[in-house]
Image 1 (tube, rainbow, N blue to C red):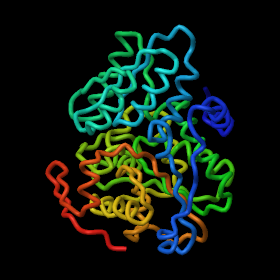
Image 2 (cartoon, rainbow, N blue to C red):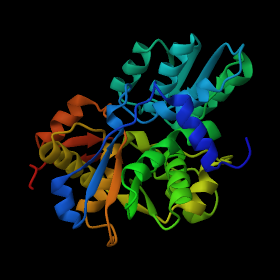
Image 3 (cartoon, helix red, strand yellow):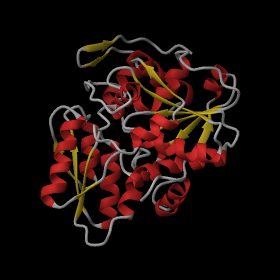
Image 4 (cartoon, rainbow, N blue to C red):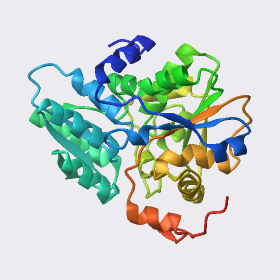
Length: 336
């Protein structure tokens, strides 16, 4: 595959049809009042695996040549679930490598889909090393969670749907980690409407893509526990696709704090009655914390997944303290 283009995303839409859903795009009345324009939620949390990662995983697995015996990947949880789901449908072995920081609920969800799970060290880089070893030594095909053209094209189908459903969008707020989602959505949206603004949103501790864009090249960052655990991990020092695409196409990157993520999870639950992961609400956190510029029209964000640790989630919506490694987020009740 040469340089990624809109045609690749259109091909991905055909490949994933019937497996990954075309998800709803709904306005939040509460958040729309805060913004002064429609604030729209793209409900990727309604995918069969509970996360957008199904799109890229299905596109990658559907394009595997015949004779492949199995696949492997590193994951913070949702990519592994997508790969496991897609591999099971094709009768393939799947081995998912994850660090000890991945919540148990995500590990259990992957095992329930029939995949093998390897817990490797305390960082995404450790998990990546094991996935690469499996590809070298056991002949499995490695599927990167973000630095793979088929994965990026699969995630880009979200951008197609956004532009078809709301061609008047002024901006899209995309949760940003390894950059596969942001690269795909931005590539699709700007191919259709070059003037649309796409802003990556991440947590303010361990945001690897943000640090890499600032440095001008991929860099390693310390990985710490976060409410937005799906956004953890590095982008790979040998990153060849998602980093250059994000650096070239994103209009800005905004960072939010753990407390702002905590409050945004409360807001989504109490105002919209929705359960979502911390990574899903970083766009909401950016809005409610006043970290966004003014926009001249509607804005959308992606609710990327619902596979949250419900014990932690219950603490958050109940206003209790949450411990994240060496950081304690002080509890407080939701205030509209």
